[in-house]
Amino acid sequence: MRILEKDYWKKIPQWKNVSRWEWEDWRWQIRNRLKNIDEIGKVLGKDLSKLKKVEQVFRTGTTPYYISLANDFSDLENPILKQILPSCEEIDPFIQSEGNFDPFKEEILSPVNGLTHRYPDRVLLRTTNFCSVYCRHCMRKRIFLEEERARRYEDYINMFKYIKENKQIKEVIISGGDPLTLPNRKIEFILENLQKIDHVESIRIGTRELVVNPYRFFDEGLLEILERNDKVWIVSHFNHPDEVTDVVKRAVKNILSAGIPVLNQTVLLRGINDDPETMEKLFRSLIQVKIKPYYLFYCDPTKGVLHFRTPIDKGIEIIEYLRGRVSGIAIPTYAVDLPGGLGKVPLEPDYIVEKTDQYIIFKNYEGKTVRFNRCKFDIIDTKKSEDLCL
Ligand SMILES: *Cc1c(COP(=O)(O)O)cnc(C)c1O
Ligand code: SF4
Image 1: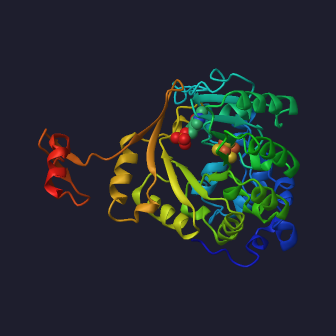
Image 2: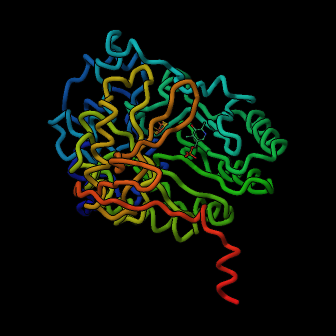
Image 3: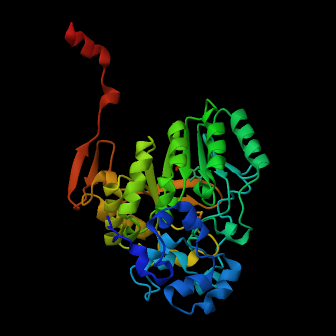
C-alpha cells in the first residue's frame, strides 16, 4: 500500500492553498475537476494542445486527487497519466478499425431504456453517463460522445417496474458512467426501490470513485444509506499499485463498517499493467486494504480503446506466474467478455497434462507432474457396504 505524504497536494502549485477540509470533500473534488486538455496541461506544466483533436471526439477529465497520484509529471507514460491523458492512437482509423462502440450489444439487449438483461438472473443498470474521471480505456467509451447527465426519473421507474415483473432477477448491477457521482438522494432513491423488491437478493454497485475520488466514502450521508440497504456489494476498478493509497484504505474501512464487502475488477492494459510484477504488487496491495480481486479482464474491443490491447495469452501468463507465488485470495479470475453479448468466459492456465478414464496427470505450479487416480464411486454397490455394517 502506498502512503501519501501529509498535505501531499500542496506541492502542486495550483492547489498549494487548498485546505485539508476542502481537498477531502468529494464534492470539492468533482467541482474542481480538470475538464479539458488545457486545464490538465496547466497542472502538468506542459503544452498538450496537439491532443485537442482527440478531445473533440472523446471527452477528457480527472479529479485533482487522481492526477496528484502521478509520481512524475514530466513522464507522460506514467501509469496514472496514461489512464487520463488522451492519445492520438484513440482516433487512429487503422488501429481502431476493428473496434465497435457497443461490442456487447448492451443497447440491443435492453428491454427498457438503460437496462441490459444478458444473463437470466442478473440485470445491469446504466444510471448516468457522467464520471469524475474519463478513463481512456473505458469499455463504454460511447458515453464520452454524449452529453453528461444522469438518467431521468421516468427511466428509473421503468427499470424498477421491469425488475419487479421478472422474478428470475436475483441481482441488480448498478453501473454508469459512475453511479456514485450521483447525489445521495438519487442513490438513496435507487437503492431503497431495489432493496424492497423481495426476489432481488443482492445489489452490486460498480464504481471507480474508490480509485479516483475515495473521499466519496468519507461522506456520512452515503455511508448511512449503504448501511440501511443491506443487499449491497461494491465492485471497484483498480488497475495499478500506485492507485492503492492509505486514503483508499480509510475509505474501505468506512465501507466495511457499513457492512458492505468490496471487490475489484482490473483491466489488462498494454503499457500500464501488462507485466506479472506490476500485477503481483497490485493484487497484494488490494489485499492489504481489504479489497478482494474478483476479475482480471482482457481489454474489450471498444472503438477508441484498441491500442491498450495485449495478446490474450498475456493474462494467462500473468495468472500462471501468480499461482503458487501469491496468496490464493489475491488471485482474480481472468476472463474475456465475448463480443455480441455472449457473456464472460474464464481463462485458466492448463494444469492437466493427460486425461484417461482411469487417471488424470496434473502439473503443479512448479511444473512437477503427478498421476491422480479418478474416483470410482460410480461403480460402488452401496447396498453391499450397508451389509458390512450389520
Ligand atoms: C459483466 C456483466 C454481468 C455480471 O457478470 P458476473 O460474471 O456475474 O460478474 C451481468 N450482466 C452484464 C450485462 C454484464 O456485462
Ligand atoms: S469510471 Fe468507469 S465508466 Fe467512467 S470512464 Fe472510467 S471505466 Fe468508464
